[in-house]
Length: 243
Ligand SMILES: O=C(O)c1ccccc1NCC(=O)[C@H](O)[C@H](O)COP(=O)(O)O
Image (tube, rainbow, N blue to C red):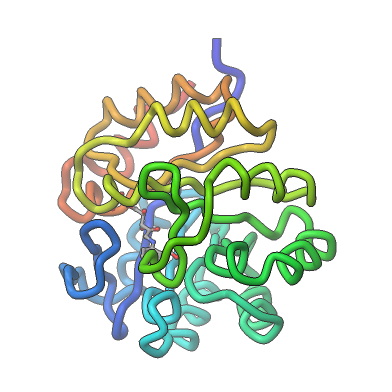
């Protein structure tokens, strides 16, 4: 029997001031879903405990939505995970100043490992690392550049005390093709730290399948496109994973 409920993190990805979803995280593949604040408030009203809030422009290096993201984060009563372009002291301080519950570092873990080791040591549980992969190759800079081997990087981050990992199969992201359960199982087997699954959720059965991985280490699931495409409601999703 499962001891923990799978946490759900509805996603609000922001590009040029709009809530969007991309396919495979590719710039230019956006579908727009309107005002990020309205989307976030809707997930909160529906009972979300977490919000996964992404600054895509900061991730791609095409500007940022920092002020708008901060306004959304500050308006929330739920816990916020902030992602996208957090790569140095200034962007980390700005992210933490929103009162978010944690930040998700991606590119920095690949390009400035010493800085990431330092902030893991300073901030502990406030820091998660996003392991965004094609196959077992990590991708940084808005998923546009190769950044090394998944399992080597995971071992390094584990040795530095990283608290948790957000694992995305880029081939699945935004496609409604189901999560990569094999990848998640393999990552869970390689680390004792909790794993948040991201990318590809298409149905309540996908969420139930992810919930079966809770004993192996999957702590939560980020859900984007499926909610915006109304494949199911957040209320139905929360009910599906309740134990
Ligand atoms: O999180 C990032 O930093 C990021 C950077 C570049 C492209 C995409 C990025 N995130 C995308 C997400 O976190 C999605 O919201 C999430 O994977 C949901 O995917 P899906 O349920 O398949 O829509």
